[in-house]
Figure 1 (cartoon, rainbow, N blue to C red):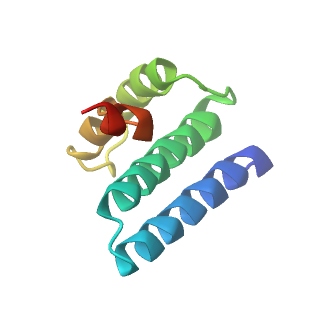
Figure 2: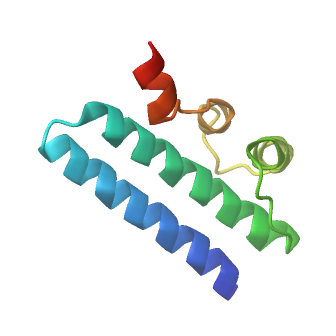
Amino acid sequence: MRPETEAYLEKARRCLSNAHANLGIRLANDAGRNAYLAVFHAAQALIFERTGKAAKSHRGVQSEFHRLARTTRNIDNSFPALVVRRYPDRREDDMR
């Protein structure tokens, strides 16, 4: 595994850990945001490992992940849909 891939996966692990911690103190919105970021960073890891290129924008991760997911058997069909969703940031939540 490439060092950059491992770095993306470590980010994903930290975000998932934060999501669990958020749930433990009943911060569901923050937990959802961190869970989404875990998915996003895991997708970045796959992209970098397969292509050697970093997809940094949401749209770039989304389109490249979808392209790769079509040809990767062990990716659950529901996973690409998670990358499409963009978790609203706190400012949007506060505006409602």
